[in-house]
Length: 461
Image (cartoon, rainbow, N blue to C red):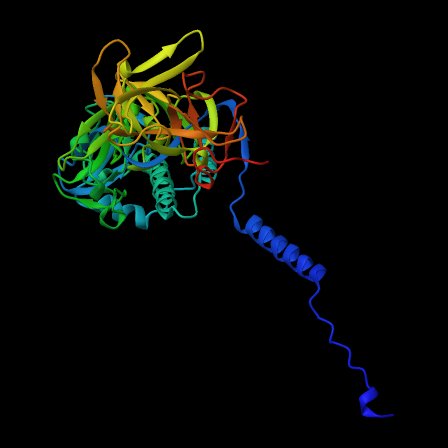
């Protein structure tokens, strides 16, 4: 076949409009899906009434009426009162063996077997039961204190038996000096040099446990004249105190006057009277006074406490829903309320191209009224906007701004800022006033995370 008879057809275009459309749709879907998952999702929260209990924990130091009793002579001390025991004036508390002969006698002579009475057994059992119930593995001092308490109880029983046997040993007569209580109170056998501490001396430095030391007063030891032999709590009235940097919280405690205090050592709760005093370094010290219960903490100087405030009732909302928004401030005489329309208006002064002055009446939404000024947003206003009063020619140039605390209401399908008044809050929730003008009402829907929206954003659920 001759080459001249070959017919050459034109190449068909590979472009296909259908494929292009499909690719465009695919790209659009990918972009939409990416935007959906990358954008922070807007979640609604239904406002309900609720309460909020505020608990605050502190480490406090105990202040008491403590009297140190000193030895009147030198000798070996033996106790005849148990720790925390209530004694009266004239009760035998301790004896002094000035020569040490009695101590030698007890080491060489068998004083016969001692059997515990029923009351003595119950006393030991109660001591151990209380320790087990309050035991904290991190509080090693309580374990040492138990050892000292049991030693003193044991020595008290042994010393009573010793006194009975001394009458039969004529060579030891007169070597023991008996010392009786001159004041009534509860006996304890430890000191820490903080017996005369006052609330004004309570500072953060006192809570450094590495610098805190306790001196245990053990029986059968040699004491000199003037040494402390025991300590006496003269009154059931006592206090705890702690410095508090948050002065606003301290003032709230003072306004409560009386608060419920729970002692975490044993979960005992007592109502205490609140007072505030400045300490020597200018800090605010919270002092809680109690009328009873001191004996429960006779071996303690520091306590972990929890203060419970009264329940606050109102609208309960998440803290994450709370936002701050800035507004223009406009004197209320420049805002007109038309009752028949239930609407607010402002008169804005402007100038036409011809230079002629004109007044535009604009409807506005006030967000709050404080100290004679309305809080208005920037939809119709900007810095320098000049407003005119309705009944005169006086004008006002918009220049002042202030912030309000609020939430974004989503009832109408868009983010609508509503002012709130917070009564109380913790890390998670806040209690706000209900049924306030320009505010929230029960069953309103608000944006759970205020940072996810801006004013007037449309919201789709």
